[in-house]
Structures are given as C-alpha cells and as structure tokens.
Length: 225
Image (cartoon, rainbow, N blue to C red; front, side, top):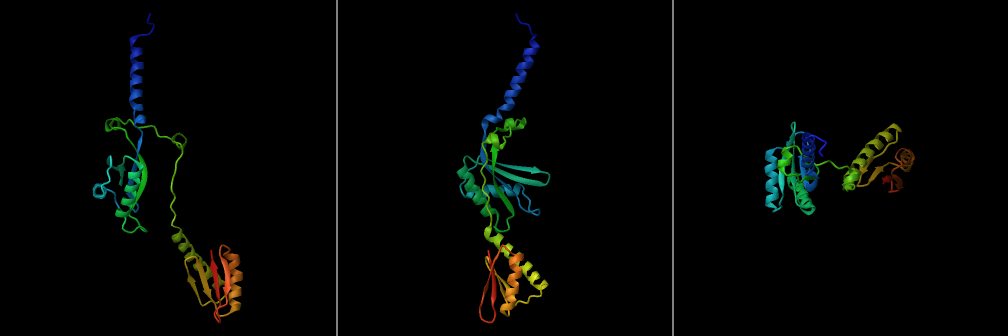
C-alpha cells in the first residue's frame, strides 16, 4: 500500500534528474589547452589577436579542438584546446615565438592550461564541472624557468653601484670598477688602497669572494660569486 502522495515521488524524481544533469560535466573531463593573455597594460587581446593565433596554428598544421575568446571587463584572453599534451606543448612554444618578437620583453603571456570538455549545450545551462583541488587532482607539476644569466647580471650591476658608494664613504680611492659576467673588478693606484677596500668589502659584501691580483702598479681587487 502506497503511503506517500504522488507529488513527493515527482519531487524526488525531478531532483534526481536535475542533479544528474548538472553532474554530467564531471564525466567529460578536461583537455590540455594554451591560454594567451596580455603581458603589458598597453597590449590588448581581442578578436584580431584570436585571428592571428588561428593563422599561426593553421600555417604550422597544428590542429585544435576549439578556440575561445573570453573578456572580463577590458581584459581579454584566448584559450585553445588540444587533443593531447604533445600538441599543447608544440603550440605553446610556437605561439610564444611568433607572438613575441623580443623574447626578453614579451607582449603576450602564453601559458599552459586545462579546459573542460563539457558540450556547449551544458555550458549554456551553466552546468560546469566541479573544480578539483590539488588533493583530488593528484597533485600538480610545474616548470619554473629562471633566467639565471640575467639575474646574475642584474645582481652584479646592483652590487657595483653599492660598492662604489661604500668606497666613496670610506674615502678609498679607486681607478674604476668593471663588471664581468660573474665578477666585479676594482682597479687601484696602490696595494694599500686595495687592502683597505678588501677589508671593507669582505664585511659588507660577503657573498663575493675577494682577492687581490698584484698587476704591477695598478693592483686589482676581484670579487666573484
């Protein structure tokens, strides 16, 4: 004998159908993608940029499963979805090269990403996959690329400026400071001045190894990492 009214069964059935519908995006999973965004406030990512990206990939015969333009306020970005990570990496490297003429001063940021494979009709209903944290995703791998040569050069330049100021404050005369790849060389008129400078810099700049090179009448104090 049925103890519950029909409408309660209908409510339960509708709730199950809606819940099942909105859980479908989790079944489709995610696909490797590349995201292109602006690296400078003066550079805009728009539909013209999307056309440029499409042409670059087409000319290189790199296939994709979808290109999407997104805009949040005045900030736009382009996301390109691919079938596998090999194509994703090829596309990232190619776009990084073609979009940025000067690799040391890029106009665009080209980054690896993931995009949902959810069909458009589910996206239209705002049915989105559940975002997974690192624990559910199984951790994350990332590659940190550091321009060590550039970083060392900046450090050497900064240290040379500081050293010049310190020697001036201590009234230690020198004949010039030369910056190398990983060294700073200071020329002096005599060994006494070089000794004074080494005593000061060994304390103020301990990250450098300071040595005096007796080169005739103009000894040199060399600091190297």
